[in-house]
Length: 231
Ligand SMILES: CC(=O)N[C@H](C=O)[C@@H](O)[C@H](O)[C@H](O)COP(=O)(O)O
Image 1 (tube, rainbow, N blue to C red):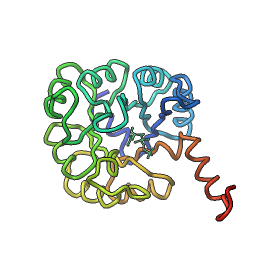
Image 2: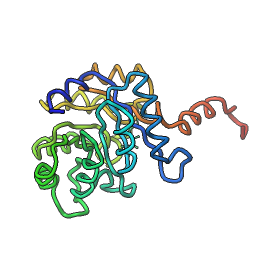
Image 3: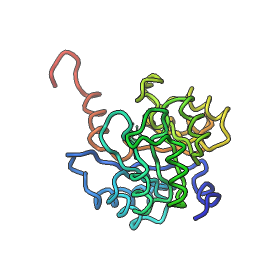
């Protein structure tokens, strides 16, 4: 699929991130592929999936574009941190590879620009730079990213961790950038998803609020907890 066709499929649409974390009951590529199918049945225009085997199985299970990533660790640069990870994700079938788009040093010593340039030699997949600030996004556009995500806003120390999506960042990015900006991170309701489009997002990616039952359940149990008791 070429870049224009892929972007046309995503414009103003919902991307659903299907991820289970290490040690969790749903941490199984087959399960994630089924969750992805269920999301597509509900209208998801693309799926975001984590892990080489998840990307492979989700790509075979759905007929919408897959945004793939590999998480390595859980702090610092951990979202598709190296060129090798990015190429692995592309080979597993992702049409878009999401990678860390911050200005922090990367574990393989390459800059983001070097990573993107070398990736282009080995793959036609698009690259989504997961950013945490305006500075990251400007750097990622300069480095050649096809898409910018607000994925890391609130997780790198440069932006506050807002309760909902970081709408101020989105508005700023939408006003400054020609590259499509995907709203991602802490979008917990349909109304918030719509707000991100109004703030200038090109498309919206929702994970936890659709595909992470443990967290969703905890929202309910916490709302039911009676103050001053332990239940
Ligand atoms: C910061 C980080 O590690 N974000 C990850 C990136 O792939 C995922 O854990 C998130 O679930 C995803 O970004 C979607 O966000 P939310 O689950 O808030 O809708």
